[in-house]
Length: 119
Length: 106
Image 1 (cartoon, rainbow over the protein chains, first blue to last red):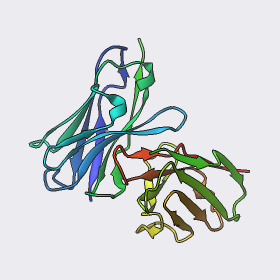
Image 2 (image 1 turned 45 degrees about the vertical axis):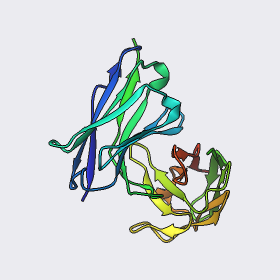
Image 3 (image 1 turned 90 degrees about the vertical axis):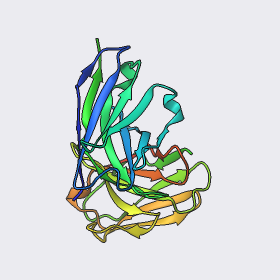
Image 4 (image 1 turned 135 degrees about the vertical axis):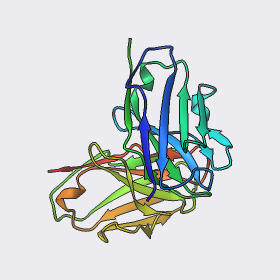
């Protein structure tokens, strides 16, 4: 079974970069699918941030402009999120997730990691 | 594409049958999925492509709609159904979610 697990610091200072790791087991991320980062803000709003595909191509939410970057380490079967110049508005629970190609839903999710941006 | 869910909160008693609404700002065909999220858990897919069932999901959950108007139905709410429900469109990038409907115990 595919499993995803997020890891990273729970506290980040304003203006710094947020970096998270998603470790995938049960499937090789270069074999298929899109691998996304999604966040849920306090108050329930959810935002898709971007994905890295099995081929290594990326696609980002324009709302995040040039602040977001998703990369991967295929030797460790991990993919990463980097969000630069964070503010308190980036405080959220961050999830990594998998979807198929095309119009598919997000069918596998990690358990989520809460990140607070505060000085 | 903006997704508007209503109501924001719905208070019901177990055994009631309910409908949750999701409206898209433009046509998304049937590329609309419903998720349930319980406290301290990750979202899980309940219904995909507006009306298709998902393996392992109880049959009391069903969906309908196409274009811009979609509905999630729960036939006879069970105690474990009290959670937040989201719709999400996969018709265009960026993928977007509705604001959620919180189903609470009356």
